[in-house]
Image 1: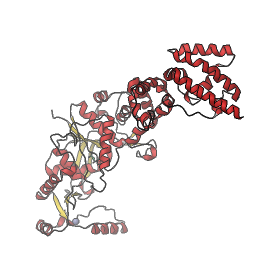
Image 2: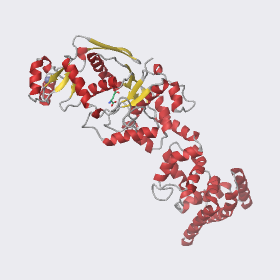
Image 3: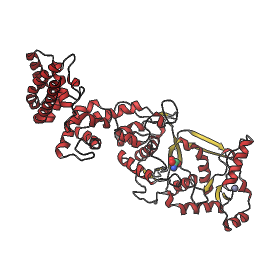
Image 4: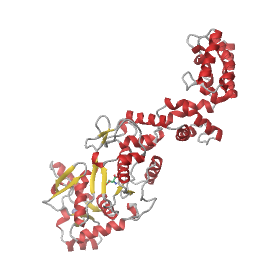
Length: 499
Ligand code: GLU
Ligand code: ZN
């Protein structure tokens, strides 16, 4: 059996998106499910749109996701280099090979001529588009002489006319084109000596021993050209599988309009990599859905390329949010605290913005996780919810302390009573004892339980809506809890004195 080799071949001309992750992930899962090899190849031949920051974004994103390739620019491997701009000599050699065998030809048409052609056709409402095969008729010696004379040129594929090109896509089945209808004699090697996508992609897939090409359906229109190139070289054609499209809920191509699409943004918004991976793994694939989240290994074990859907997959942000919330709930305190840590640091929970936690702060972060686990869907929501455990809360306006219908004076009385409860509340080790104690205190004083709790809650957490109060007091401890309450009480008394 041949060893399966697949690749993710992004062009670093933009940030990594959901679509790229889907392609990378399916290749990864396919390789893992078959004991094959997953390769990263950088298709950076479009030098006008290339930017090194996009390469960095690619590495950062996949490191964050925990998806690793077996061979690639950063890992090396038997087919190195894995960066197309470092392989240009190879493409020139292979382009020459096609020239020599009469499967390609030199074209000397200037950009200006091609533009005139386009304009003239448009004016004539002509149906033809693309190159008019003008230089295909040049004799070989004439073309060679012009090249030798230093005339700028490109190399084009000589598409075999009057024939058909067919292939069987693993998902879409048999597909056929009339060669005459395919992009006429596309450029293989540009005038600057750089290859086009078509040439570099095919040469590399061949030289890197790629057995299966799993790629987005937007590349389907390039496939006949690629098949013709394989045939022109006399190479074995890999198996193609064009993955179903990923659309927004309005049926249009997934874009910024629908929400975040760059993986960076998902990361910043507090999505958990595993949740994103789980959800994206379902886009166009069939897994037993809904019950649980799978690890990457489990996804790989269950991945079946023959169970992909032909219909486009719809990206549902709500469903992803559900996965994310579920993943947050599933994590242990320590694991969730590690995920939340960069967000807490960025919000300055440990002192300066970006500061690292002390061992005590780290332990407190873990201990705080049970308080918020059920209340957040995104990691980015966590710091604001637990800030008061690390930093004295900003005292809100006096009315914020008032229970329903209460005045400033009754609120002060209630908070004074609550103040006496803090030391015992800080010493209990669970909620039942606290509840019992607070209920009794309220009864004895003849006040409503809720009225007694509200000013205390605001004094401790800085807000009327907060994580569980008793657990907060226990985490803060007696000294800090008392200090928060004293501070709030002095403030309310000061307000009262000015009235
Ligand atoms: N460089 C292409 C991209 O940006 C690769 C397409 C393919 O997989 O053939 O997706
Ligand atoms: Zn030409």
